Image 1 (cartoon, rainbow, N blue to C red):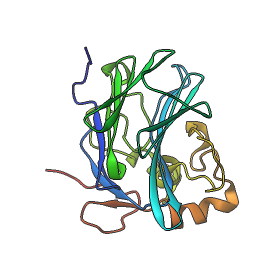
Image 2: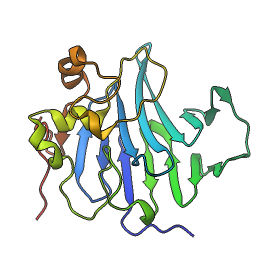
Image 3: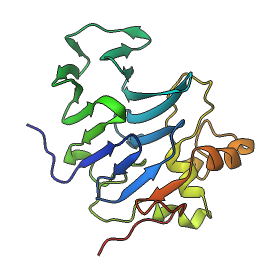
Image 4: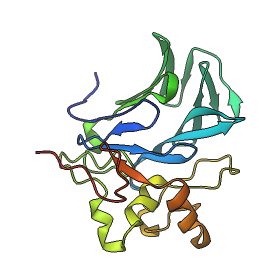
Amino acid sequence: MWELAAQVCSISNSNNYVTFDGEEFSVNSNCRYTLLTTPNSLTVFSVQIWYNDCEGQIEFVLCINYGSLMIYLRPGHVVEVNGARAQFPIVLEGVKITKVDGKLVVVINNHRIVYGKNGYVLIQASTSISGLTDGLCGNSNGIQDELSQFVQFGDGAAIAYANSFIDQSLPTCIEPDPSSVPQPPGCMPANVAAAQTLCSILNDMTGENEGRETRKKN
């Protein structure tokens, strides 16, 4: 039984997403974004969405890092685990991956992740990590203040942190580290400006580039 409560983060239409706490944003494509990561005190658990430009076609790849496992979900129901293609049914080290109604469903303890066509992602997180998560999905504390906690680090710091930009040539997931704000791992000082320009423009759903500003709901 999943303990869901309001712990749902989703992406639709490739780049429009809703955080655990209900904030709505959009992000640019052709980049890699950290949706969810947990603190070092817990078992390693992070989720990234990659928008890879493959000869003019955008390939949406979901990367899940759990414990010692690195899992890639690719179009066509392709699943790779630690560099090797896996065959269904996939059950290993607390992780189960199945195909349901044309989508890939990943169950990790009390967390469920659904990966579909055209960059569709749904993350249902257990209440056990409520208030502990970082990344674009937010901290799941029920307050719509996503990314605003990084305002003290200067304009663009929240964006640079949350989007976890890494060079397109690096074939690995890199987890953000809170101690590295405003420069997440994989984003060297010389690349911060480029990261913010190329990948780290967060928009609210009005379509205006507002950087770290969020859409406020009444």
